[in-house]
Picture 1 (tube, one colour):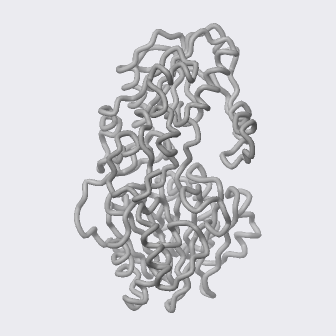
Picture 2 (cartoon, helix red, strand yellow):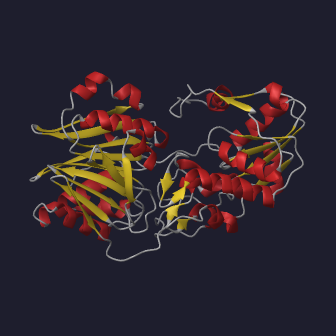
Picture 3 (cartoon, rainbow, N blue to C red):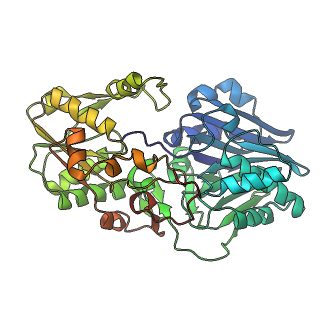
Length: 459
């Protein structure tokens, strides 16, 4: 896996004493979805307070910071920047002052028409302080709240008519909370309860980690409103088969999550099994690239009848926010983060399973490390199809001319990464890894067909 980053993570809780502490615990469970910054806004009897900063949850939400956020209603966020850059002003929650109070909003996804909407709002005299599409949503909501007399759900419905792209949102206005998902359901969103109180999260693992129970996924196009502790489900305007990003199952989501009926763990096992069926290799050991390649590697080993083992040790103190000001340090990050387990790989023919190849640089470094550690052969198997197109909906897939599978033929890419052979999950096999999903899926980065129109200025 090289230079592909997680999505953001959202969370909301209604009516739970010390809501800030509950949010912090949930954000720990969602930390894999973004490590650049985090924040939360908490509504108490004396008003709304918020705190956000660059960095990880453990550094931002110290006990003094949590003590300064009293209240029972809260929304919270962990961020990886896909638009707007890694700056404090783009860290969420995004706040918008309205005559009905301060709107606090957290967002996972990307609006593909954020540019035209932003230009339209600027023509109306609005001045943007940040560079993210989440601020566009906040301003749209503020305008619609004015038109609807403060009706949060009606305002959101009106905004949904204008917005294109992926968005899972949780927002707070006064004593009302609203959660919604774009009409295609491109990004996950689930609801449940903790201590009898309603909660919302990007993934089911966040609710389970705080001792809660998952009740349902928020359906594509659905709004869920909470007022005075009562949950009201507002159905979508029209049913849609949905288009959940398939990479949620391949890489983004935590393996202990279930998304729209499909276990992420089972999806990754199936991907590994399908790789074994389509790309059989004579080998002595199957290993995975930590962490997202490990389960697919187990699936490969189980089906192929080849022993599975550890071949790479991960330094868990090197995070994705590691500063990389030079190419030398960018390259060094791989060797700082992963080390070959020489005793396990020396003299072996290896199957190395990973989730994707973006530019090919990292994969090549890992293959080189394993061969220097004594591996006789390294056969690279990828649990997704080749990346051939950019993503405009929240996944940091590079511009097309930077993608390894576009720049090189299959044979050239195999030589570029130094592998003895290279295989990808066939495009037509994607549906087979999510047999229990209630939604269809988006595979735009693999085939160039998107659920929403791509921006006019393709990367």
